[in-house]
Image 1: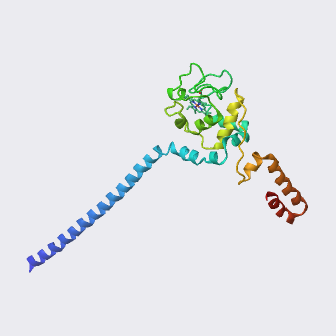
Image 2: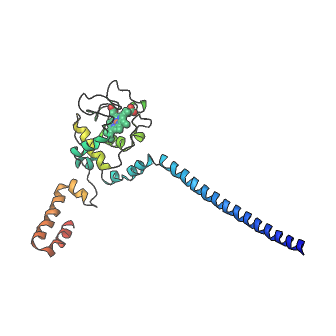
Length: 233
Ligand code: HEC
């Protein structure tokens, strides 16, 4: 009797132990899996910023399809020198722009627009930038400021680029005002789909509907709506 009970008891106990051990391993495996997923999560989290560092501006400038939507000459025509001066704060860590200003990490930029790439004698330009043929023109400067590393792959200018087409246009007219004073390119006539082209491209057409719309609006409100519609046709 006793030995049998004893056996039974020990049998049960060892079952319990085995169950506990199995439960323990399951728990342990679960913790390991959790730890792994947290670990890999942290790993990929700590890796993620390394790549997007540049592409963030990249996608912005790519979607800066503002450049595609509004042609550069039109942006330049509407640009503001004072706003451009404010944008230049992003460049001032490396560049001076006053006449005869010292070179910093980057060359002095007085009168750069219109000059050959690498216009300051004695500045140690990269071969990449020096090798770009031709002079700095408005379109080239816009491309350069969008993404220097694309305009002159291998350039020493470690600046990601400006995503906003308006910021670039403002900056370019500011650069132009500092020693270059090139004539701005003529704004392009844009197919009259949006409202913006009418303002810039065709002053005569643009003004007419605007006046037409304003006059009826002042007088009789209901007449205002049909008038511009007729004017367009
Ligand atoms: C981190 C420093 C740095 C910043 C910020 C920087 N640049 Fe530069 N820039 C340089 C360097 C270095 C060069 C020379 C590049 C080379 O030789 O490849 C350069 C070259 C240039 C050139 C060519 C000049 C020439 O003589 O051909 C222009 C134009 C220019 N930068 C404009 C700008 C503007 C505008 C900004 C602000 C949006 C800016 N840079 C921001 C360092 C900088």
